[in-house]
Amino acid sequence: MSEGHSHGASASSKRLAIALALTTTFLVAEVIGAIVFKSLALLSDAAHMMTDVAALAIALAAIKIGERASDDLRTFGYRRFEILAATFNAVLLFLVAGYVLYEGILRLFSPEPVGSTGMLIVAAFGLGVNLISMRLLAGGADTSLNVKGAYLEVWADLLGSIGVIGGALVIMTTGWTWVDPIVAIGIGLWVLPRTWILLKNTTHILLEGVPKGLSMSAVRATIAAVPGVTDVHDLHLWGVSSDDVNASVHLVIAEGQPPEPVRFAVLTKLDEVHGIEHATVQVELGPDGDKTGPGHGDTPHA
Image (cartoon, rainbow, N blue to C red; front, side, top):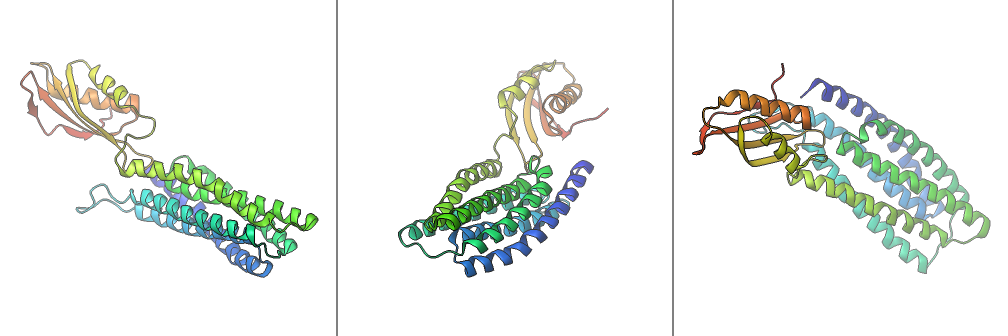
């Protein structure tokens, strides 16, 4: 694991730990408030807050586990655990959103009295906690799907808190208790498509898809343009986690061409042009494709 990744993981874990402590503390208060004030919107926000706690805890555990070195059993190490964690978070949020939608529809047909003042106070505190947590997680959300999953959980809950505050104000001024389930349904509908995007991204990585920002044709063209390369085949691009890229490729070089300088040039180009630092290059000589080996390694550095 690179030093840069190690520092990034350490910073992310510290932010996650602080956000987890804040969110867990408020979750207890919000659940109590939802029960006391009989607010489905507040309960839906508490449910999202519960998934926030789970997401933050799992994300934190994923970083800690991901820092473990590779071994003879898991040669890529444990970094993919963060993708599994992000996938779990997405599935969990899907389930919670579905439950909130179901309960919201039921409440539309049989509204219940809501303690709007208490609902407003609890939601306002929740908004503050979510703002702090989002600020803490924003730095790592662009580089880690694991942290991004936790960030989206908190973002959804922040909007939920805003919705609950708005709903409480409407109920206080009009007495329309049906606003409570409407807010809950709105939160659920907002969360679902964003959760789907996260799940699609994590599934793409688990299926060894081409990492975001890379193009097979562009990488192939870069390799083919290296002097001495006559053919490129069996090119594969994949990522173990959300912030690394691996490649393997077979290439044919012209007869009489020394293989090692060509392999070195290909590895260098992959790093310089596409940021691929870990690549395996199998060189095949001449028209008969005689292989030279082992032909693999990390990108060379001068």
